[in-house]
Structure formats: C-alpha cells, structure tokens
Length: 281
Image (cartoon, rainbow, N blue to C red; front, side):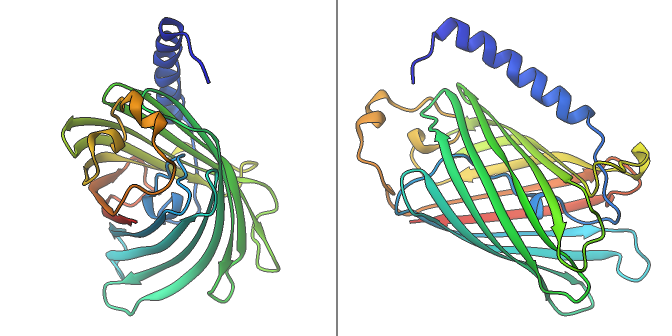
C-alpha cells in the first residue's frame, strides 16, 4: 500500500487531533460502576501467523461502596495467530471483592481480522468480534464487534478501540446496541520504554444515554515496557528491511504496562490501579 509522504503526514495529524477530541467529548454511560473494554484493554491491530500471546490484565478499583470499598478484577487471555491475518482468542473474566473469593463472570471467544498491516509509520486497521458467555446466574450473554485503528508517526502511536455490543439470551436487560470505547496515545521516550494516556468508557444502551453525570468515563497515565527490539516497539518507524523479513513470530518477548485511571463522573470509580503483562512466543 503506497502513501504520499507529505499528504499522509498532514492527514495523519488531522486524524489524530479529531479522534482524540471526539472521544474525549463523547458521552458514554453505564448502569453500575464496572471496568470497560475488557479490563482496560487496548487491542492492537497486528496479527503474526503462529504467534501465541498469554496475557493477564488486572485492576484494583476504588468503588466508594461501604460494603466493598475496593474491588479486584481480572482477565486471563490466550491469543493465537491462525494465519497472517486471522487471530483467535479465549478470555476468562472475573472479579473479586477484597473480602471475598475470586468469581468467574464470563468466558469470551473472539476473533480478529487484520485488513491493513502497519509497518512503522502509517495506518493499521483490523476488525474484531466476539461472543461472551455469562457464567453468573441472571447475567446476559453479549456479542461485540468493531474496528481497531492504529496511527503512528515517529515515536507516537495512537490506538482506537471502539466497540458496539448487544445483550442476548433470556437475561438481557437492553434490547438495542451498546457502545464501549478505549483509546491510547503512547510516546516511546527510550529504548523499550514508553509513556502514554488512556481513556475508557461504556454505554449499555445507545437509545437511553442518560445525563452526563450518570455516564462512565475514566482517564489516566500509563507506563509501558517492551522487551522487543526497536523495530518491534509500537511507536518506532521500523526498518525498511523489516518488510523483507519472513512472516511469523520473531521469538519470545515480554511486555507490561501499569497505570492509573481516574473517574471523571459520579458513576465512575474514583480511581483504579491497572496492570497488564504479556508473553509472546
């Protein structure tokens, strides 16, 4: 896929500004305080054939609830690159009030199709979709789908994860579409290290958005570490020679990020400490 450098850079700057402004201004709701986007997950668009990724995502939430003022939540995920463009994943989701035992809340099966491969600067695009099986009595199953968009310029990478969803089954409480979003702006300030800002939100029913103060928004800083080479790091330009490398996993790599999310409305937890670790091989 060919780009005109000057025109692409101008369009990219406009897209970065517009995307961040639109998402920051959007009003997205949720009926009860709970984590959005699969435990603060930002999914990347790239797919590597044969690569396996094991992930843990966890957080401690300050819910300001007298009965359970702090709550832990967890995601355990396995991803596999079935082809050069198809990714399959299985996720176990649960939560745990600090005074209680861990409880599994959902099992999610997901797939991702890469449409445009990003190599260094430029655009990456994929589509994701999945089905979540609720494991708690009274909870509804859920279908979700949406694009994954990456825009990279130098050491800066913007990733957007908008998701539409619908509850299904006898226990559904909404009849229409819901919406979740997550976005991340990351800057690689040193080899293997980056800093960024992430924002998440959720609406259960697009037809009944409610007032702004009833909506859930969280925003906060994140620190990133990636053991991979410079060419593999998210914001780097990469080497032109990388285009000629054989496809497939390049070896075992480890990455992690830790951050804080601060609630922006009364319906959102005041704060959440988040952690994510990934092992790729």
